[in-house]
Image 1 (cartoon, rainbow, N blue to C red):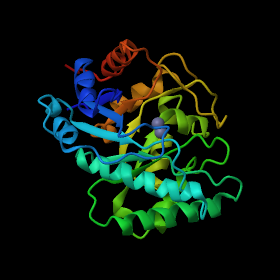
Image 2: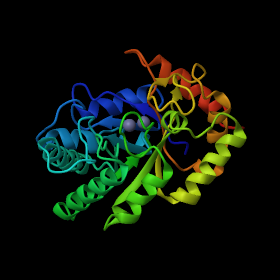
Image 3: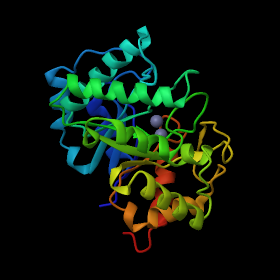
Length: 285
Ligand SMILES: [Zn+2]
Ligand SMILES: [Zn+2]
């Protein structure tokens, strides 16, 4: 089963996202498990969780992942925002667990001027603390590749690998690769040869077995610009050949592919993009 979909709004409750996703033909989806610009949320009610996990269309989605809120920053230490980040992340993990969502995609964090090495150490210690405080969670954090804007960590495969190497429970982590972010970070995916080389490098440094989600985004920003601006497929700087290669790559076939590209309320852009991506797979029914 091709696992292809997009980031879907949970407006009106998380179970509504399932309907929206299936309605536009998604076989995978990503959601926020709480308001992505707020710090805190109490657990879902039993009714909200059951409406999601027992939804009659739930089995139409072969993969469901969540994306963590944008305020969370694990790349610092001993600040009020860091305390809030740990609490917020724990609340999101618990909400994922309630919805039986296996992966929570998280941007590793920003060092805010203290340097990448220090930032990475803070991320590692934060993840260790979260893991120690919540030993029984099934949901895994999937660290996302970033564009490297400002002091954002995770724009090189080496940085992600070093987090995986240093944490106490690496098996509780996975990786999400965002095509727009890696391109803006300087990995040239724009030709089939380039895409193959980038994924080969990812495999060598991080390991393809760590990859649990692909974010399929075009980039408004140029190669190596370190600017994070998503664009619709066919309109950005990466070009369609990269996406054709990704859709055809056998080693990426089992990985859920999620669009996070601009769209209006009727989600027609997602429908068009999914149709285009499917057309890249020879003999796809
Ligand atoms: Zn993200
Ligand atoms: Zn992304």
